[in-house]
Length: 304
Image (cartoon, rainbow, N blue to C red):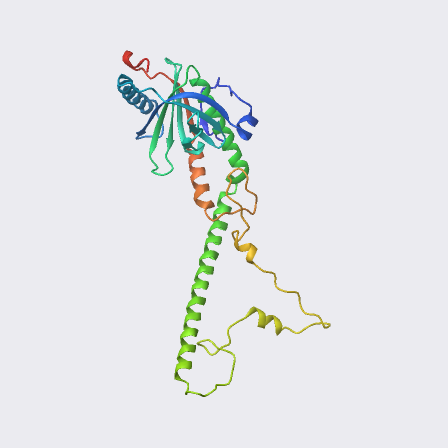
């Protein structure tokens, strides 16, 4: 199996798998900002982004503005960027959308990663100052990506094609049920119009014999109650009542619970599972490239 990430052979993970799978690893850093980039990977790409954001920070610093502090929470579910005091989430970067991560070997504080935005689908480069923890954070993101990729394969990734087919069938059934409901409503409207017409055309004062109402095809409308009562009894007992489906309507046709890519059983197929699995499969297939690189910034950019 091909590895989902690339890094030097001498890399070592910083944390236990349990820490990233069941919890998250917090880091404090300064957030220089994010900027759009043309490519999802590449040293030159992040070098230009770092230079651009550092230059912008120099200007803001000369105006008296400080670099905002943030808290990074890294787990197999992504990299969250929060405001340290209020814990308000500013950015939530899912791991399968992160394609490149690098730390600066000349400035131990700077690290960056490229993530595809979930709304605009643009590639954004995020740049941070982490007080000599840049390489550790880069490795932690790489480890989280590796664990998430393996867990995805163990759970939802192995049978993506099967899930696609079942999701397609489920969507078709839902469409048919919706179409059937619309047809029933149309038939009911026609029956009501016909009934009103019959009442308005009957002679005044005359009493028409009461008979079962029929539809436009001169057939008695189907009724679960009347149908059940017409079933002959056996040994003097009524057949068991038909169970109500009202509780099933609250869930989908397969009884699916909210989608979790790392906790989905054989029968859990939410309506939108196809698009989500496609997106995750594509992201993990692209992989994450980790690099320790030299940004070669100008002396003016050596410190923020």
